[in-house]
Length: 257
Length: 203
Image 1: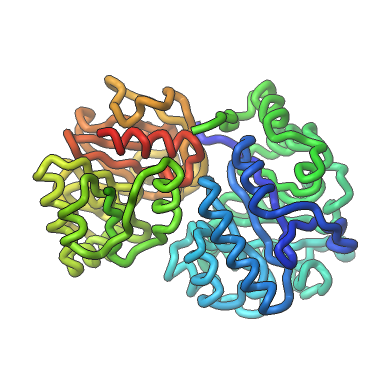
Image 2: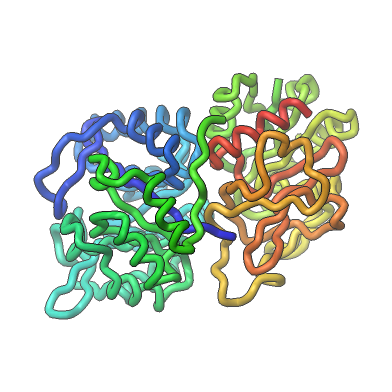
């Protein structure tokens, strides 16, 4: 039986993992390689690395770190942040990434989704959308959630899928950092609109939030979170044990090869 | 030495790294001479069947893989590499495969309910329909591995050594003597996957 995926997300700046609260006030957490290995050993089903570095020096450092992560960790790796061209896809895929997540780059140039899907396959292209309610309408935000694009979110996500995105990461800016649960209403709207896997992001405050997510919205394929994992508030093994006890299929944590 | 056949499709970095992680010497190579010297041959692949089969033939490495199989060396196909072991595939038209495993590669849409998403992406548990293959000696029935695919091998139950339940019993792994294949990605399946690669190195 296919299992629900639990995905820690690591924001990397200047070679270190950081976590923003509502995308601002970043604080240094840990080494990407060490943290990635720890998660992989302790039951993470996939890892997402976002490069939030602006400089080209930082980008080179990120790419080097990614290679090191891929040498050490044998679970699927998704990479995002600063993906604006096919060259960017190529750069991170060569380092061992399995999927590439596009966000602002696809907003600027939607054909990037189509071109990348054609070259690398739909399964390789993840459309990540930062979405916030503005006057009761779901709007897509760009540039790390700072800029309202004015685009209606469901229409944008449907367009992304029709261009070839094989998976959606839906990050609710409204619930991100609040730790009061995932944005079930927004997720339900997206799940009803597309047939590709949807990964819920933004708002996980504890184990119960994941149970609620998968029970209320069986169509959601995965839950993504950062700070609750990074700060040790939730151990993935504990989370999976509770999910399993609630009848939600998960991959059991196995130790050591 | 394990030869990882490089015929220009997909990323072989993780495969090479996973053999390194279990202390095995593996070389990524597009050189038929190197493949002929190898003890074991690994045929990877991502993308579409027709395109990959064409690239494999154009590189001339198809013959090196066939020779290794005929010589009794362990040969393993992974994901699309497993599909290429079959007689033919039906992704965007009909294309010939290597013919090492009797059968065809067909869309999973032919066997799963329309309500299920395609591709089949994620961690799914393995079931062993018959006697457990040596490939799985270090893992248990029910262990999860990572899948990303829209097509699967359709063959005689004699050759199916593992299935995964996704609205139907999809072909997860096949074996015919010294030739085997995994539809899933052992190099992305954590300790379970590494243990399958370890067992392959002992075949």
